[in-house]
Figure (spheres, rainbow, N blue to C red):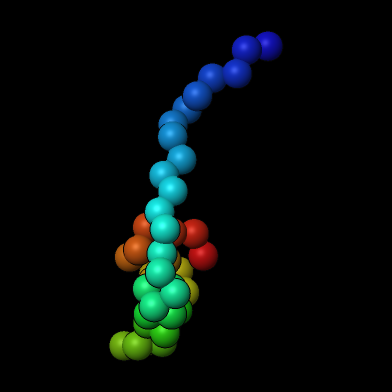
Length: 44
C-alpha cells in the first residue's frame, strides 16, 4: 500500500505572550474554547 500526502502541516511558533493572550481570550465576550481556537486556526 502506498501512502499519499493529503495536505501539509502548517507549523507556527507562538511567543509566550501570544499563547497567554489566546488562552486569556477564552471567556471574553463569552467566547468558548472552540470559538477562540477557530479564530486562531488552532486545535482546541
